[in-house]
Structures are given as structure tokens and as C-alpha cells.
Image (tube, rainbow, N blue to C red):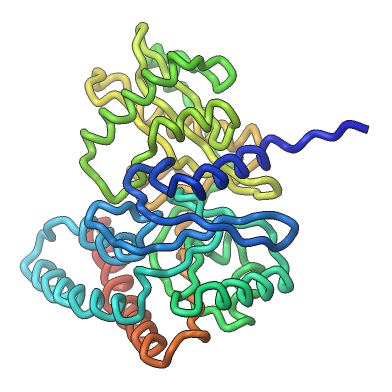
Length: 365
């Protein structure tokens, strides 16, 4: 009897095998970390080992970037004098936080299940899987904190409870938007803008190189090194295996945008880790809104919920705000590291996470 390996497993395995031999920056240019594997639950899973926290390291491979640099980058100049003073005072805490992170070696953590994407969808690991994973990792990395990113009660409540039961600590780190696409209304943006869609199965290698060039132009326009800078090899992986589903937009014979969507088997959520568009298009061609609508339409077609990253520019409607947590395990570490991590968590959540929430609220009023 012939059996075939599911395409998703092939895509994940190829990503993992290549990352182990060539490092994380093979797939994401600004992710300089070593990738190892851990076996549990019948499958191999990636473990990112962090060594150097370079200034231009992306948030997917650097806790220093994800927790400190992102928050500082996202702060724009407040309007009122009182707001400016509050923001200035809150910025003074980043120095001590950086020192606590260094002492606790949080920037040298072992990240579990990290495919170097802005969002992580974890398999439905049970309590025994989590226990085995924790035991293996603390034995293999006795001096590193263990870490899992992008956890929320809306997306993975059972996983979070299993982790808490084993002593993993949760740090509230960012807010994201979740939406039910079934509640979204169909848009006629495509017809209005005279834009055509090129689905994944119609893209060619030549198209891929042109879409990658468009993506690099978009990255240069945004000038945000904190986001993942996907390599051409990543685009090729997606086209070949469907690791992320690619969709291209064309307007009057030229490429106008590219969308990359990602999910996992058995997961009820869809994310868009890759979204880029031509910034030189006429204002009437709102490529960003069109890509956003394509994302919603795909989720609706696949009957999946939508997970929007923190960089979302416009509210898609019928959305809700969720708090994402970073889980940290430090019970195997020396007392000095555990103390530093305890204070880092307390100060970060009080002075950075809550302050950022207050800033967002002020700007929305």
C-alpha cells in the first residue's frame, strides 16, 4: 500500500533540515541564530538557540528586539506635554530592563517551535508532550531559559494551561487583533482598482523573482529592520512546498503586491507573515487594502479565523484585541538568573506593556 507524506510535513521538514545546516538567516536574512531540533509527540520541532542580539535582529529571533526595541520603535511623538513627559520617563526604564535581560540570559534563550515567523501556531501538544519537551530542553540547555512566543488564551488555551501547570511563567508582551472572517462583508476593491489575482498554483519561477524584487523594494520603503526580512530562498521554499501560500497582484501588466499566508494542520487560525506592495501605485489602487481583503477572503474560504499581527494598519472590522504572552521556563537556572528574570517580567509588564497600552489608547481618542 502506497502512502504519501502530507505536504505540510514535507514543507516543515525541509525548512528544519536546511535551517539546521545553514542557520536561521538562510530563510530570514536578519535572523542570526542556530537551529536545532527536539523530538516529541512523534515529530521533530525546531529550537532556536540565540547567541548574539544584533541591533538589526528581527523580533522573531531576538527577545531583545521583540520586547524592548519594538516598543521603543513603535513610540511616536506624543501630542501633549504631559504625554511627552510620561513617554520620556517610561523610556528611562529600558536601560535597567536591558541589564536584567542580560543577567537572566533571556537574549540567549532556547525558543521552542520557532519557525522565524511573526506569529507562531503550535500543534495541539498534550500535557505529556509538554512535560517531555521541558525535561529534554532543560537537560540539553542547562544555562538557557526556555521560551515560547505568541501564546494567547483565544488561540491556544489548553497549551497555556499545560505550560502553567509545569511551572512556565507568562509575560504579557503584545496585543494583536483577531477576527472572524465570516462576519466580514465582501469588498469590491478588486473591481474598482482593475487588479487581477495570480494564485499560488499559477506563479512561475520568473514571477517569483519579480515578486521578491517587489518585496525588497517594499522593505526598503518601510525601513523597519525589526520585521522578518525573508530571503529569496524562503520565497522559493513557499512556491515549491506551500510552506506559506503565495498570491500575487497585477495591475496593468505590472506586479502590484504579494501576499503570503500561513497556518498549521489542525489549526483554526490563518496569519499573513508576508505582505508587500508597490508604493508607487496611484492612490486609487489601494494595494494594501486589496491584500488585506484577499487575506480575509482566503480565511473565509478555508473556514479559518484571522490572526492579525501587531503591525496592522487598519481595522478589518468585527475584530477583537487579544493579549499575547511569552512563556518562560527558568526552574533549572541558577538563582541569580531566576531573580533577574522575575524582576524583568515584573518591570516590563508594569512599565512597558501597560505604558504602551495607555499610549495606544490616548492616540485612538
